[in-house]
Image (cartoon, rainbow, N blue to C red; front, side, top):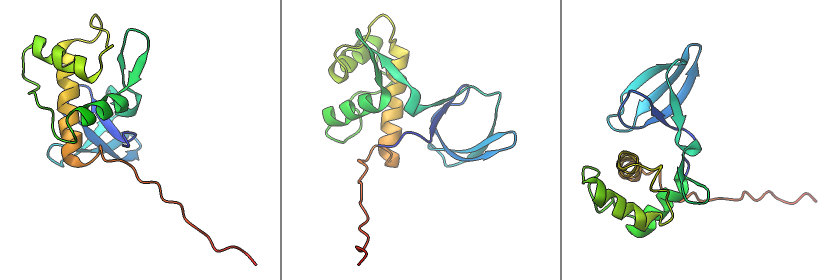
Length: 140
């Protein structure tokens, strides 16, 4: 699972894949509709690899939360809709991350995590990374 080039852009719905850097910002492609957009350096942009969820003791990276969701859902989309009521969302998220901080993680945050999980799963970004080791012939 590689979230290093996946972006959440403030004021824009969905997630974006970082394509290239430009002088005035960068180009990104929407994961929802594959449209390319230019994003200026003044926009508030977050890398998914840098986002974490508060728990009672520490902050858990979003990649770990997505792994927990994938295990719970057996590799399928989330069983509940992101449009569910707050109590249902919180009950579901307690199964995903039992120790999440209920005072600092809101239903709107859970809704966004579920939406992101479903989108990333559909686009194949939550697949396990296979590490291949190249073998070089031994020098004689």
